Picture 1 (cartoon, rainbow, N blue to C red):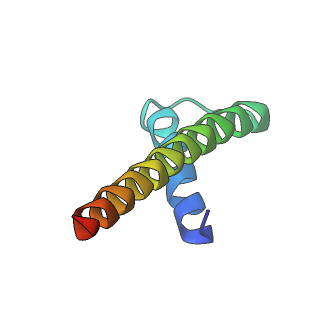
Picture 2 (picture 1 turned 45 degrees about the vertical axis):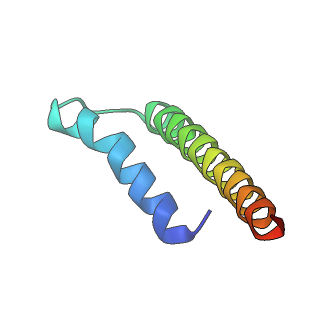
Length: 64
């Protein structure tokens, strides 16, 4: 994952805690970042899978 995207994911993960006024511990923040990272990784994998399917469909369309 690109460094900028990692930072964005981390900010999105931490923002709700900060908005609620909660003072999170380092472990809380690490866990939140890990969950956000896993979600981002899943989204990336899904996007790559969709891209591959689209490429296959496009190639099949060219063959017809």
